[in-house]
Image (tube, rainbow, N blue to C red; front, side, top):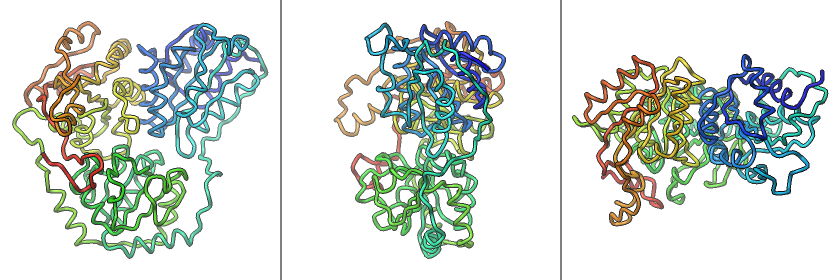
Length: 556
């Protein structure tokens, strides 16, 4: 059958089982939006307030479901407004397809109105990108883009489409899409390699697991929990790996790195074997790489060859999918106990365990009250970036993967509100709480209008301390309290803002007020803001100063 380019785009999206896209229309994508209008019963479109919000919404949709998120924007400034969201997805290995319009083929390269080389701009922050100049190539390009986005180490792919291509007509044939993974580009891992690694694990006296976001992207959380329990191995996670290991498990040591727990940071120094699974050894985890796991042999398993020996040299490395690793190595393992080592790690877990336990309202209670109200079930936590992000990571008990939706690699302030919208849209029966700082919140609070327009029942908890908290914390610790440009004004009236955009508003400066607000949010299921007051000098602790050994831990 003959279809035009816009019809082909819609048909290919349906082929890929896309049910929701996020975006903002404009001249270069009018043909596409006209077709979306005609097919609104097949694909839901969420109109955000800004293209950046749309990109973060597609990201949150993808992280919370494991599906490919889709965002669409017009040419020029519409396309460039996606850049931060694309980079955020790229750094955290999030499967996303961004579709941008462009000027017609005959105007490309002529500095035409709203023309920009978005393919060139995004080349370093995408797995791949395309500019489709011929309608005959459009369908295969879209299909290939989705396959690239979700296969191997996931990531964003951009498709730039000139406007005349969306109107041009060609022959189109529907195809049945194979959604199975493609590992053809991975090296062959032989049984003897797995046998050797298993022997190292069985012979270790003080093994320790450092699990990253790769566990969640590989959907290998269940296998990780089984692996750690079988071998009695204490297990930490990076920020991106949170939820990949059940934090209610006594073997869980929590977060590792700059703001990691005492147990995680001491264990990685004292262990004799570090098993690193789906990690990239970020500088925020390593601190001083010369002293990281310096007494241990290191086993590194990752699907991306580029991560092997990039930041830390591994003694044993396996480039393979984590599900395959767990499945194949199991036959060379047997149940093992490490009682003395586990006892030592458990003793470290008690150090600093009462941090922020108080009768007054503290950030720890922000998260504990949400956990108590939801029983930790059917609940997603999204965050902006800053102190509140780490409090959200530290003080909620994450029992399953994909519960924490946060920008780790790029650290994007303004990420959380858009991401919370995408998460709630993808999981309409769940509770979604976006934990925000007052600094991050003001960057993209225009997306409150999106929440209100579609009645998306996200609750935004603003940790309101009147400052750019994390920067101020560094200024306190390392800049002799020279608070350059980190004190925010008090002009913004959150109650009037909530009223203006049509969302519920709650104020809390005591634990009782906060709990009452959370209970109301749970009951009412409406878009809401909780303005929760935090002391100006509240800190994120523990902390390891940049460049210091990972066990050189600041507790005050």
